[in-house]
Amino acid sequence: MPHANLPDSCKSEYLEARNIAGDSPRAAAALLRLCIQKLLVELGGKGRNIDDDIALLVGQGLPGEVINALDFCRVIGNNAVHPGEISLQEEPELVGHLFDLINFIVRETVERKNRLKQLMARLPQGAREAIDRRDAKAINATASPAPPSEP
Image (cartoon, rainbow, N blue to C red; front, side):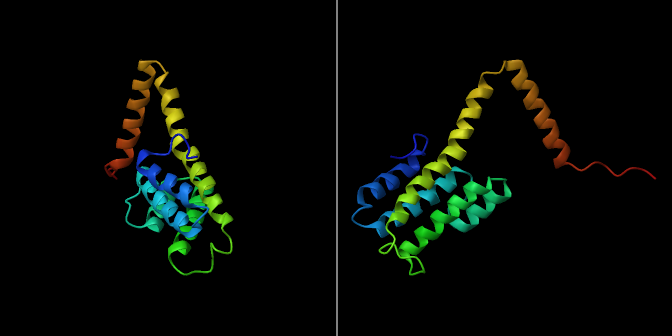
């Protein structure tokens, strides 16, 4: 089953892949590749190119384990629709790993973010406002360079 926090925009592909995985691992992998592409948009990607979106998220500090999971899903999904070195007819169990990895990615990104947001909401309002002011000050300090000093 999909992780409870799998975004709605991704669920139909995941569930359809689940329904057909036994009959057509290649079709299931292709659907899961589309699921990953949609998930990357939810994580901040542009949705045009999976590899570019992964690179963007690497630059934003996405953990290495999540990057590896995304790359595994990308490569297996690509090989499902394009001839490659991996044959899902010979290794249909790879599709099961795709389901597991998508749930792992959601757990490590969406679920963690949601849990932290819920915890932060429990802080007193004054503390949250102070944190927001501190962060805004830090962002502004890095966004505008300091004026040159006089000799």
